[in-house]
Length: 380
Ligand SMILES: *Cc1c(COP(=O)(O)O)cnc(C)c1O
Image 1 (cartoon, protein in one colour):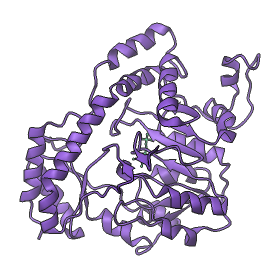
Image 2: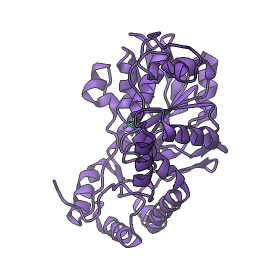
Image 3: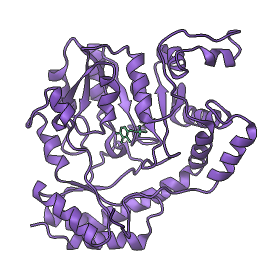
Image 4: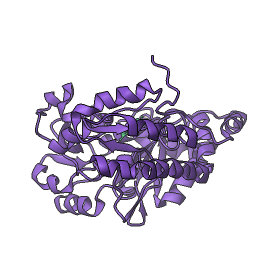
């Protein structure tokens, strides 16, 4: 493996992670739903304004729970953007659904709401918008279409924690939403996630599905005197040791946000004029969106430049990367009927996009090196 002076990502710590893990151990309960799970859950419910939050082992698992809650059956269709991480689709495919890939908007790289109506059929059982880079999808339009057809919306908000759309937190728009605390996300515990339940008709069953199909959560609250097998389910609880790590990160929210804002703004200011002169597209944030500064990308003028550009940065000790190969053109996507040309904006953006190193503790000095190298790379 190449060793980089400036890696693409590096997990960053705010300070209390080890102390809180020690405290979790001291409680005598390091499995799910312990002291720190409760603290994280309450914090999310309060700060996001979500009626019920359940910590999970990953965002992928939160999406799998959503698929179970929506009772997705073989042959059902689920509308997902082609430009996303695989598990936006696989969580539903696992239940037998057929992913229907929608193209993205060229400005925010989010689901193109104008394409949805044409893709909806009587079998469509969910629409799954992704807030790419933490910039909101067009939720008014998407919810309008979904409601008109009576189709539930599941937000994949893996990038979107604490981002807002028209003043309201991401993850609060869909009936259900999923968060990620993977190492590469803004707030992390290594691997972890959360299911946000905005429509309380799903709340009781969500607890059961997360607890292996049992009513153990009700039992722990003293609502039933024994717990038993009542439904389908799996093991989706985050260990409290990891929740302890996550809680330390959440308490450091202001510091994390300030650092990430600085990193993002330094890239934007440093590359704005260069990008304009060279026909390079920088991230677009609509005025009614507040982004959580999850990542920074540039869109090169042509797809032939991407690999050479990444290789040039590598030669300068800088790790950059592409993002999201079009799902409809993946081996699995093709099995579901994906063909070149189905999602032209996705195909175009995917092969022109380069993500730059982005982590909380990226120093200004290292960032200046990245900006300088970017400007020196040949674009012809
Ligand atoms: C990271 C990511 C996921 C998966 O998150 P895990 O917690 O690793 O399961 C899903 N969707 C998107 C858009 C992501 O970026």
